[in-house]
Length: 279
Image 1: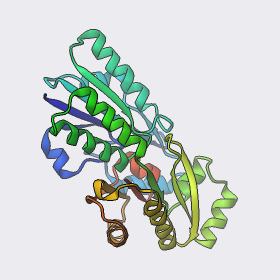
Image 2: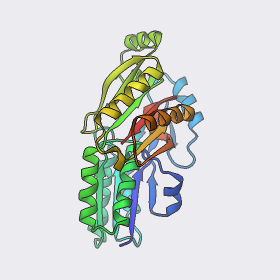
Image 3: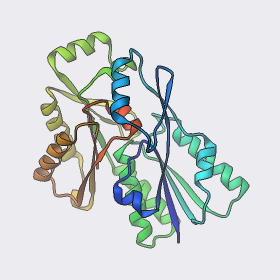
Image 4: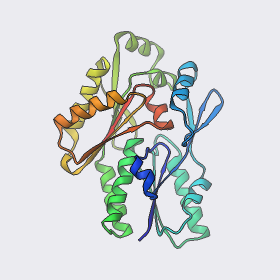
């Protein structure tokens, strides 16, 4: 069966995914001080990070419209899969569900499933790769959905932030705590709770110690690592991502490790210097 995998733009694509013709990104819109930035191939990370740093306000994002998802379902593909960032972080999932329903109501005749990643960024990438793996094995549509949903339940996402300003601006961290954390160089180790909500797992003094603590969580919680791909997304810190990859290779034997550069939405969450891991 022919198939298509659609991700909102929080999910980065590898070069191979872009060139395969099987994947498509639907862009979110980012907003900094009233200026709209489309999270597509025109996104300029350096300019965006500079604008975020200069603004006293928290950057915001707007999810794609249902009509965008409806249009993405067009085409000859008989199986369509949509992977959105966590429904607890964005309206993208609900918009995608409505877009699917609009397409089916008007045209029908196609299998379409929307996955709530309960993750973001490279977590969505790994889910999309799992869907591709299942399709290439010749699984039936329902089997692909069930296998991928099980994969999502077992996946975990972690991240460490170099810059805490976005957390302060969006109210997750008070100004006083942000100042204290900055003065003491305390960096939070963040993750998700299994339902797609962001939670703080730990903290450490200094970015390198925080990264090592994050890797402790990865090593402790991963199951059957030899069967899995591990993904790393970096926000303007590829050398740091390479260091994390080298350390992970010492600790875990995984199928593969991929490193991606943060797209717009991921850059907004991770901020300058942030590292995101999913497995």
